[in-house]
Length: 338
Image 1 (cartoon, one colour):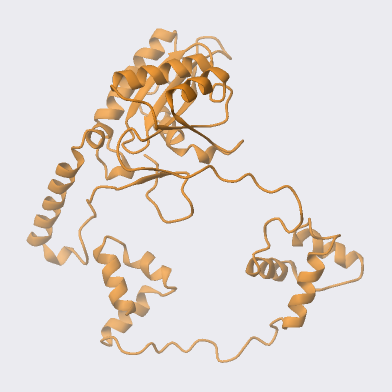
Image 2: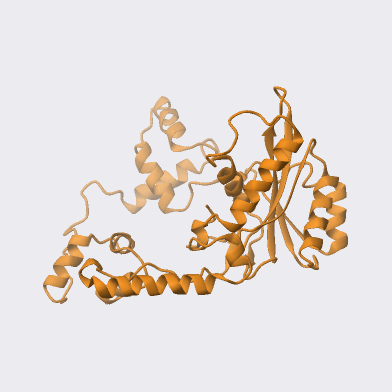
């Protein structure tokens, strides 16, 4: 059964070593089983329990002590020396950490302030369902002065659907950009999810009022958690690491705008995005990706037929990426990076 599962994973595009790692097996073990023609799992495992294993009574005593009033707000590295100062030794720090991890108590063990819950998960299965937007700084001609690039990206296709450069951060600019972006795409904004971080322009009264009036679903990151807005962050990183991104500050807002025009054109029409099987955002947005990826699949199949000895498993996975998740619940999903 294990060999069949691994074969199925490899045929679907997985690499053998990571697939074996999921099952806590080495590739050498799998090779040995194949050489033996399958058969029984002959791994023996430990024959006896470790002599120094904690008894259930000792485990209960440690848990009771670390969860008592003096220690329930402290990590083991703080608990162990305090117990030593009191003339008491229960276990080492590593043992306490392992025991708390096994019991699911490495987080908040006391009635302290709970963590801020993750934002609601949103799923995009086609263009213009979920958008993400943010503002980044562009250095101006005077030290300490900046221009502000407002940019909206479609989460499903990664297409930049709207952008503007301004000399200040204002919710009014953001609201106007959103309206213009919908108008240019001839799009009814009702029902669109618009995600942003917790900056002032994102939660300004003008912006929120506009979204409410248009029927847009507003989504926000947790305070001071940049990973909750990964699509915009990845886009800005790609932009600022372009070889032609100016090393000097922009001389004027017109110069900054001209550069962004060129970048947006490149990004939407030429940049092959790693998270969508290396098609361009425009190709995915306008429905051309299936034909492109199908052609790539044919190329790889022909290559394998010409040189079968060079292929140990399935060819590269060129199937289109399906749904894209914003702030997903814990599961194995496609990455958002470029």
